[in-house]
Every structure is written in structure tokens, then in C-alpha cells.
Image (tube, rainbow, N blue to C red; front, top):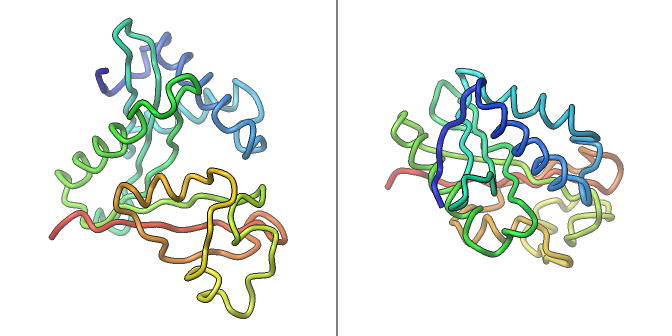
Length: 184
């Protein structure tokens, strides 16, 4: 596997990445990229100069994953979004490699923190399909993964749940915020 920065002229890579983004979000977050054209626009957005866009290529040069990050908080923190891995490549270290690559790049740019939001719109955790008010912190402290929600993937990479926005995506559909310190 090789990780590279695509350019706006890399039509083949952009098209492959758009398919992965579309397919990767369909089951749990279908409104985010409802069609290939919207996914392609998402890829074009993260190709902008103020973003980092990276794609992972397999040995045949096919895109197997993509990741983006955008500078926030005067460069002290970067927001990781999106991350998508081709479904047949799950569990093969592609996501981990992409996240670690972006962490390295943002750290080189002076970032001290990287963060992300990971929605629970499908009741995949004990934070979904419940009223988190008024004991939000108690719910976070006792969170459980019910159906392979990605928050545990990020925890394995050193990310911590730092908060939630209850009902961010509708009643009982929170956004779970996670972050990681990049410097000792």
C-alpha cells in the first residue's frame, strides 16, 4: 500500500475515491453523500489548498481508502474528515495507516490536537436513540458499542471521547466528538 496526495487533475483517483466515499457512507449516513456526484464534490472540497487530502493505493494503483483534514483553531487543531475505506479492504490496516499519515502531516504543520465527530444516527452505541439530557457526562462515561460504531476504531488509535452534541442529527442522534493530543 502507498499513500499519496492526489491532485485535481487525477480524474481516475478522484472517481475511485468518490465511489468509496459514497459506498462507505451509504449504510449509516446515506444523507451525507446521497449520490456519486455529491461524493465527488466532497472529494473536490478536500482537495482545496487549506485541506489535507490523502488516498491509499493498493499494489495495482487502485484507491482503497481516503482521508481528509482541515486546519482549525489557528492551526493548533485539525479536524479529521472524511475517512472512508473500500469495503473489501476493511480490517487490513488501511484506515489506521491513513489516520497515522494525517496525524504525522498535521503535527509537521504545528498542530497539537486532532479531532473528529462521528455521528450515531442508527443507534449503534448506547448514546444513540436515547435522551442524553440532563446527564450527558454520565452517558459518555458509560458508552458501549452495540454494532461496530467507528468510535472504538478511533479509541484504538489513541482518541478519546471528549463530548457529544445530543440530538445533532435529530432526536436521539448525537454527534460524538473525539480528539487526540499530538505532542507529548
